[in-house]
Length: 224
Image (cartoon, rainbow, N blue to C red; front, side, top):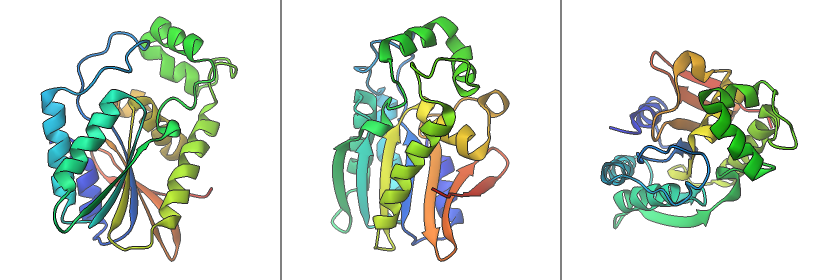
């Protein structure tokens, strides 16, 4: 099922423990252009998998806050996860669209998306290696810090041991965190799968991020 890497991390961490989880949206149809795709929603299988994922989180948390990119497929992912999670014993709070989960790293949106269509699969590497104008896109370091700032701030505000904040975003955002924090390149481990992502937790020793590769669950201290 989609999202199984997140569920494996949750099991590994032996909850209850408050968490912020950020994932790519669920399955969507193939997109052929970076431009004009905000209205692309989920496939029927994508909706089903999102509900199943929410259902699997039921036994781990009693309260969930849902935030998503202001793009249709992310909203649909969030709402379907919420539907799967919600029960008489569970509380669901749909906070709504959040700008950093969209393209907050895009400074000149039209030029950046045109460049993405022009470069195709080479776009991410050109961006992350600093080969594109900073008038078009924020650098990888700045984009990573922006994501971590939001995630850590929210995580620090969670008081209940069985509360989770769930963020629904895109593959580019997922790759920002994966390479910017974990130094994992998509050329080595592939592009993020649907509903792939990270779990952030806090304890007496600090704040930590967890990611599941094919081989291991890896952990990084988050200092922002």
